Image 1 (tube, rainbow, N blue to C red):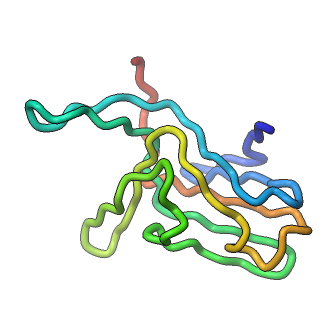
Image 2 (image 1 turned 90 degrees about the vertical axis):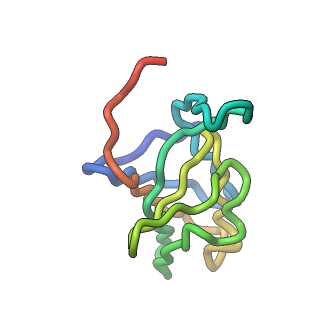
Amino acid sequence: MELEPVSVEGTIHTFVVPPRIKEVQITSRSGLVASEKGKRASRFGIAIGRIVVRTARMIREVPLDHPLLGRGFHPCERDGNRQWRWSNGVANVPLFPLTIDDLTPVQLEIHLHAKLSSYDV
């Protein structure tokens, strides 16, 4: 099932996820970024600055270094108090057990670290 955001306000993309969905996959454009000579290039998608999960009974900000945010994410980056995490273009966010139950719709907010210009690959 593919979901479009119900709203996009600046860098905040809000999605409504139907009940009983245990995990969502954040897909985005991505590109290969070369690093040091001789090392393999890495795939980067979007830089996420915040993830918020809301249900009728709770609001939870998911720490970007949460151990459940592994597949499809690069390690967290920091600059002072600011923190962000790059996806590789296909990142998985588990909703349950992050929510109290999986019987109600979930509002998922993805806050981009910065609004980036589109680019041609």
